[in-house]
Length: 382
Image (tube, rainbow, N blue to C red; front, side, top):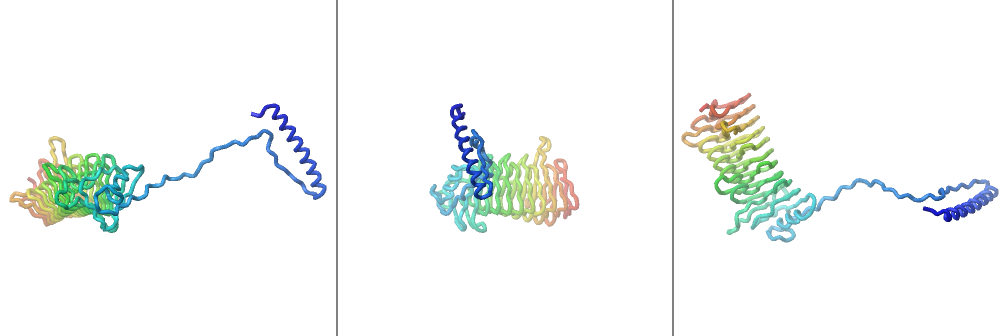
């Protein structure tokens, strides 16, 4: 604040300046015939700072983390180092594996915490595998941590081996597989699930444009699903299991397939698919799968008295050339043991079994509906 003494002094200075200004102005008018104006700042006014809004700026994403080395040491350029680096920095990360590079792991990796994308190079020419060297311990390739969001694309994953669940991948978060090939992986032990992939309860699995081939387990040689799963434009082929050679779905799970082929898989029951949850398939085919006891293409399970009723919905699906091979086998194409099946515009033909070549169903335990669907020969009620 300006004191009274200082204000009086300042007033005298301004007054003197004003007298001088008017004198000069009169002289200028006399000499040049022009007017001179001046803007003055009010006495006692002060500069008042203010905040101005800045333009919105996004936080820059982390730079991609390159994987250029095939080894498994925790040194710069390896996959192990890249995953550790991603884990220790904030924000979303992208790991890029060089084209035509095969990463051979000799021990398990840390779980993937996300948000993370792992990209292979080229047209799926990058490989991540459990080492084939003698003495390599058993472990899966990738484990997705609870709640993590992870995308894997343009990558080949192979030779995983583990006890219990998920030979190549165990997902407990949200996982997207895009143009991924998973092969030669297995789960061992009683009740083992998901030779290639196990999708845990309350988890989400999205598979697009991928191939699940030549994997094995007790339940779900290719994929075992206990959560939610969507598979689009993919192939489940050549997998083996005791139940559900290609796909096994558990109670309370949700599975949806779009234009996906399930073919050349083998099992004791449910050669292509064994459904125990909610399963829908639109387009695609269930082709040349085989089972021993029944359900060469597809089998359903459940327990109606306890309230466990599986639901299967098939739309525009071809179920052909599947087989059940035992002497008293049932349902070369489809075995409805428990639950409900709805067929819409499907073809069930050229399948073989001792009983019910196209479909065998237990009317006391399950029901089916059909609309514009061809069964050749007609279904058999047991």
